[in-house]
Image 1 (tube, rainbow, N blue to C red):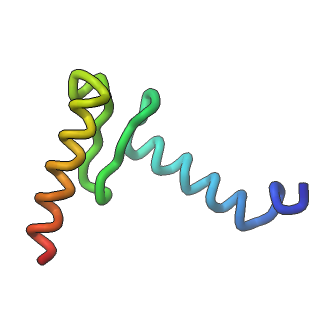
Image 2: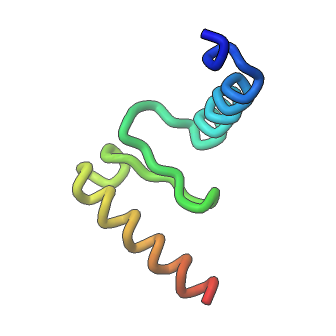
Length: 66
């Protein structure tokens, strides 16, 4: 209980809530990519397509950063 109620855990939980609100997450699984992009199964058409979108976006980000 001490760890659960610790400052570190509360800080991380607050950060997670902020990210959820920033990405406007409505359900799971949902994916935020590099703080720039967001997708989920509904937006992509299915969870499988969402993974394809994620892979594509990650590849594009890697190309930019190289």
